[in-house]
Length: 582
Image (tube, rainbow, N blue to C red; front, side):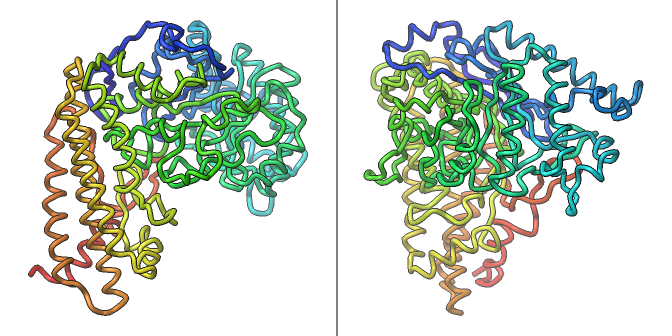
């Protein structure tokens, strides 16, 4: 079966469908195989590593992967002593040095395991991340007037060269690095600090890339995957992308890593226009456990959209998906995020929906002349689906994408804040949905938006109906197919009524006259739907549930918590008070 217990959910870990079947036997085609097929389990910062079948290295080999990216937030840059720079940074016998050396031992073991499985061992690192004592001792040479570790300073650049040299001296079998700028996750590395090194736009990227290319690719013949995700225009703007990359001499070991969307992994965001540009090879990042779309707690099949273009993309959009760039020489690979991204839950007891996305992505990348539907059919065959059940499952998967689009987003426009519902948190019109709801109101589309959510519920009702009539051979998978589909139906039913209350409330705020009957009706319907949704937790295979509060503050351990003063429930209670109990 396809199960694996999440970090906070008790349950058995499984073996996985048809493990051991050779990938070549599955493909049935002879088209272009992309050079790089990589996977990473993107662990939640501040939490334990999830128990997942995608840490089974043989499974990755069977799926056709040739590289494993380790993203457990204890990177090699936090597993070196910096003795070649200054022996007092981590003094002998200090607690800090013991921590670093213990971390290094874990990384040694991980690299050995990955390479023994025949995969490239790659580690994810955030730049800048440096030891606290180093920053304190060299502060006058590396910190700018805002207290940032700044690559404009020669000493900062020298220290990063030392860091890279020590990484590969300490871990000679490490095949390469995956580098991120923009965000620096520190909850798991207590003796380090960091910041975004991009202080002068494209020029900062060029400074860093020159160092990395020289130290990693040229001097040591190691791989460097440089992510364009950096909280600036690098990931979305063709002009910005070319301004950076045109100033970097190509090297066969230097590859740029780009999300398939023009921005984060969100629906309605266009296919990334920087893909295929410039002189450098690129790999494409695909999130398979979608952090803004219930994280595998509901059916959420995205690979049809990733490969052929999502339904909301205009037919005349030109390039709509990976199939449109499959023959371009710059398109050199796919990196799946099999698990993770974002923070917290929902936590899932079964990886069925993640697995479906991972399988199709990895197997399509082995022969890009095959269609997405053909590869999807292979997954169904391995899962033991036959006859009419194959048609039902295919329809369910495609409907899940439609239900997610209209249940979580809107087809009216690209939302200003699609993050209103993310991880295990649900925002409201008091804050996160305020701008989008005002746009809906000002355009006279309140009733249209409410009907759109009602139509989404109808889609999820069909998903749940199909799930009840599909006979997956494995009982646990069959059970999860049904409970996750029911989860989607009940969750988006509650969302429908919450939006109706809030939109009618925003309308009343503007006009001074509230549609009391409609608001009361939808409040009652929301209360019923939410109680029904909460009832799912009695089911042993139910993922953890959403909280009706906004994404809140981060605690000292790096975990985010709900903000009980903002979000869906506080907003609904506000309008409940306005219209009274009836």
